[in-house]
Length: 305
Image (cartoon, rainbow, N blue to C red):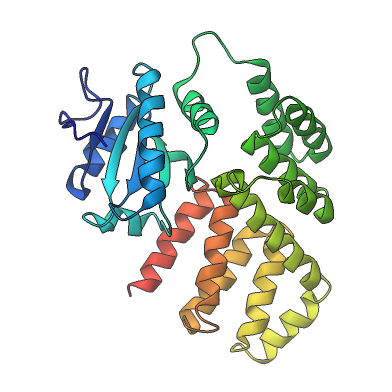
């Protein structure tokens, strides 16, 4: 791994394409610098075998992008604070920052083809979007507007051309979940290779499926769960099940409020189940969702109060 020094003050002209950062320099060299140029952060440690496989490939692809993006590496053994703040639970973990916030990322070693797609998404392409990229944008827009049927059709067409497109696999699974076709979503995710299974978007889709399956079982008991809580505010199981069902029904804020209330009442209940379920919510919503950001802050306040 390279050890080129960063030039202070952000992504100034001549800054190294690949360099190391510390907790002290993270704000200037990642957050501030990302307003001028996308910055990829590789969270690694010397004892991590997959990190040693991923790092050189990531550096190679970043250098090949000819300045479209920059890459920095943060040793979490020497600088644990940032990794803790971002709730990084396993490495290698890679996050891309743009305009001061994380916009994309993945966990685990990835094939070079997936890393190229990751970097290309960040750096853009002066030749304009490819047909696949245009289709992906259409599929994402359809999913965001609730047109899951169109999203399913578009993602399926993309996968005919690129069967190992991780974002399309995850998108198709999520769209099927949106249509209530949970068995179909599981079949899509089960076809992912072991390498693709490490992709952050596919992992998030799996979490979304688990939550949807759990919520589906609890949906018929909403009134009973509410009654149980009214009768006994310390019925932690009822509060947990109600929050999960509400999240599955799209009522994300009440679901998050319920789990935060449970964590406040008894953080160690069922081996910190409330915190672990919140982490799943965050994974499903994505690291840049405003609800994720606000809920993470509220959870951190409770954890360190």
